[in-house]
Amino acid sequence: MDKRTLLMHTAKRLFAVNGFYGTPTARIAKEAGVSNGILFHYFPTKEVLINAMYLDLKDRLFVYSTSQVYKGATLKESIYTLWLAAVEWNLENPDDFDFMQQFENSPYYSLELEKSHGYVQMSLELAQKGIDEDIFKQVPSTLVFQTMSGMVETAVRYLRLFKETQEDTEFKNRLFEMAWDAISKNKI
Amino acid sequence: MDKRTLLMHTAKRLFAVNGFYGTPTARIAKEAGVSNGILFHYFPTKEVLINAMYLDLKDRLFVYSTSQVYKGATLKESIYTLWLAAVEWNLENPDDFDFMQQFENSPYYSLELEKSHGYVQMSLELAQKGIDEDIFKQVPSTLVFQTMSGMVETAVRYLRLFKETQEDTEFKNRLFEMAWDAISKNKI
DNA sequence: AAAACAATCGACTGATTAGTCAGTTTTACC
DNA sequence: GGTAAAACTGACTAATCAGTCGATTGTTTT
Image 1 (cartoon, rainbow over the protein chains, first blue to last red):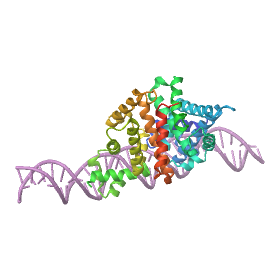
Image 2: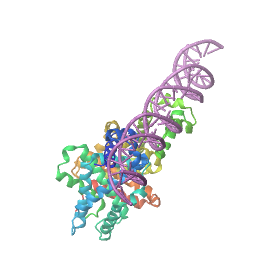
Image 3: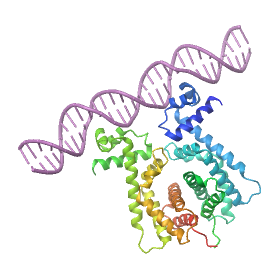
Image 4: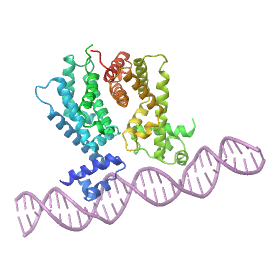
């Protein structure tokens, strides 16, 4: 692993446990086994390091999630696959999840940063499709997207809190049904 | 306003904008118009100040929300009232919302802190009631509670992003229906 | 093989900041 | 009105930390 990647891995782990401000750059370098100076060779400031890590994580989560979706899947299947992939990726990478949560709720975060990501566009299109087909509630596609994102977070938090449920596929399906019922029209 | 309260108000505003670590204690004191020393007279450390503020905010949110619920209300009415009160309180106090989000996603936060609050107990009882009456899905009451909390957050974020929807009661009702559908059994 | 360039090191620094403290003013009480 | 406690002040400090820099090593190019 090159030193740039090594630094990002070490930083992520330390940030997840101690927070951005609880983690001196010197400590990141030390625990990565490299010199202090090289960190600032790759990342001119600490903030650049943090932003780079965030975008990198989002990218990998996006690539993983979308790669799971089959062509020809129904809308519900696609949403389910995306939801499950996101949930499981976050469960398998708890440091990443903690880091992203912390970042998204810090003053460094802006929605502009988010919009630059392709996956938002793709998710919004999927939401719009559901609305047009009268499967989803008649609300803005951005709301559908934000609700699903929120339900992924809720699911991850819950599954982490009650570890015994993490391998329970039936339980995960119930979690997904809650998310699905929130955005879909109900058949009365 | 006594200086202790004054400090908490100033701190909250600065924390919301600049974050905990981006806000020196000296600046809090200065903007509150008091001496540096008095801050540490009331709060022995910065962390004590942060924790005290968090518990204070949660208390006030709890008192406000529960005071809105009428006796004799149906379960759905009670949940709706609690949801709406929480959403509107957060909209009217954006600094508080930002501060709480930041705190809850920081390494200083622990669930133990949360459990010490009476309102969690009360909310869990309401959730259990809905489960027992077969109105809610057959899932743990803690999950119902976490889902509702998550849906409050989603609603607040969305309403803040699209300010023109903030006065739209009909739209808020639609937001609540999404939350309600997530936790309730659907009538097929 | 020489020159140019990139990667790497780690000691150093200037600025910042949480928390202290010795002394002053205000309040509470007898 | 005397006194003890509490509130309050602001200059000070010890420690910390982001970022610098000059020196060194490794790699590519011509």
